[in-house]
Length: 145
Image 1 (tube, rainbow, N blue to C red):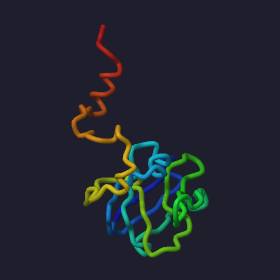
Image 2: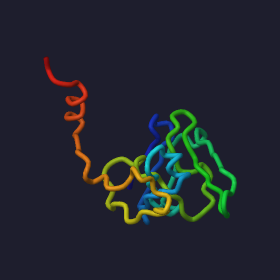
Image 3: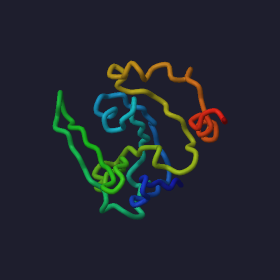
Image 4: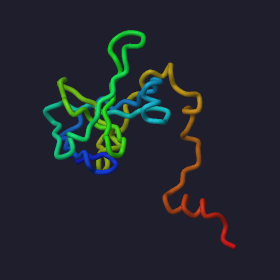
């Protein structure tokens, strides 16, 4: 079982199991919502998902149909703005942002989708330097005088 929450902890939920796929969506709408090069989502069966607290804090935004149905929808915590699962689950499946889940996940992303919309700056990132929390703090403090 996985516990999950938004940034402020107001919206909390549990997931019994992740079904997959675990996708990284590069469409322009997901990039705007995430503020990043992609939005991650892992599929969960509705019967394996339950809210523990904060369902009333969830707000829903729907963008009208742009090119063809369906419209784009996103749910988020009204307090901290974190993307959340929808308050009203009408479908047998839902996507959960894996960053909301505690602990390590048993699977890694298994596909990139809408790559024709991928930002140019979101390519070849594995070659970038990597820093631990301690290393980046030291780096940002600068050299000792």
